[in-house]
Amino acid sequence: MNWPKHSKQGAWLLFIFLFLALPTWSLGQSTSTAETAETSATDVPTLSAEDEEKQKLEFEIRKKNFELDAIKAAIKQNEEALSKTQGQKTSLQKELNVLRGQQTVLTKQIQQDQTSLERLGLEIKSITYDLQDIQEEVVTKRQAIQELLRIMQRADATNMMTIILRNNSLAESISEIKSLADLNFRLTSDIQNLRNLNTEYTGKLKNLNEKHNQVESQAFNLKNRKVILANQESQRKVLLKETKNQEEVYQEHLKNVYAQQELIANEIEALDAKLRGEINYAQLPTSGKILILPISGTSITQGYGATSFAKSGYRGKWHNGLDLWASLGTPILSSAAGKVVAVGDQDRYCPRGAYGKFIVVEHGNNLTSLYAHLSRSAISVGDIVKQGQTIGYSGSTGYATGPHLHLTVFAQPTFKMVGSKSCGPMPQGGDVNPSKYL
Image (cartoon, rainbow, N blue to C red):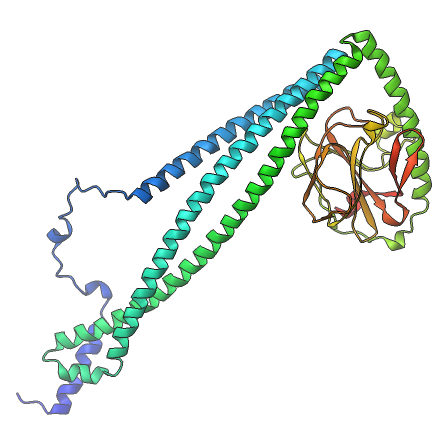
């Protein structure tokens, strides 16, 4: 039967429409099942040298994680033993045991810092490999996209009707049209994949920068903890020398310390009470989350004000800050951005008598924070610090029965460094409740 030319074209278009409307799974059903099952079970892909290196890195990172878990468990066990020792009756042997226990914990913390640095080095190397892989894949995708664009530009001048008319059969026309549709799908898919790769690259790069920052922070902690450990050994030797390793001499020494502590506490409380009365609360922030706790994941062991312990343990019945639990050598963070206005060590004037090693930071919002009983300071007067920056390390210097941090917040207009009668340069001011701003 001879169809008019325009009828043939209409029929072809109808067949194409019906064919393209079929589910995609019906296409290409002629593929032999046998052809897809020819892969031998013995064909094992060979890893490249780079892939082998990556697997080795992953194994080493897992190994470091196990080592760190074991060190953390040992630290916890040693801290529990140290806590029991600190609860014992005061004696020379107890103090020597406490110093030894603190040295053990510090040694484990140093080991933890070293292992963490080793793990970070492995993680940085692994991320660097990932970045290289992504860069290579980006180059490949860009080349594929460029090739697809060239093919589609050549085919752009051809419309569907021309394709139908120039082919000898319906199958040929459908195949060519489907090829163009596939090219467009591949182009869209490759462009999306390229975007995903760029997003992944940005994330990996950010992670790499964070790892480098962690290395810097960990190395800083490691260096300072080694100094603290050396200081603890010096402290043990001084104690043995002063007491001649005799309990009677030690107890006599303690009586003198207690008398001095009471004298200093009376002086501090008398002036602080006066300065509290001079606070102009209209000049202070009303409340809100202005400050952060100087220790991550800590707990408050004594609150602010007329606490039950202060009523029985302090002559003035008042605690001018918060006490935060911390093992020796814990990094102390600045509660807010500000300027360091004082750094001191009162143990030079009155050992175990006052704030010990301390830091004072002025925050520019009429609040000033004091960090006391430190084992080491990590900044100097005049330094500008950020919120959360490590400024020192926890300890038990000054009037402290064990390692912790004492945090006082002063109304800045009332704060001043004074030359005390009993313990050298003394931070003084009208104190406010830190919890109001945490």
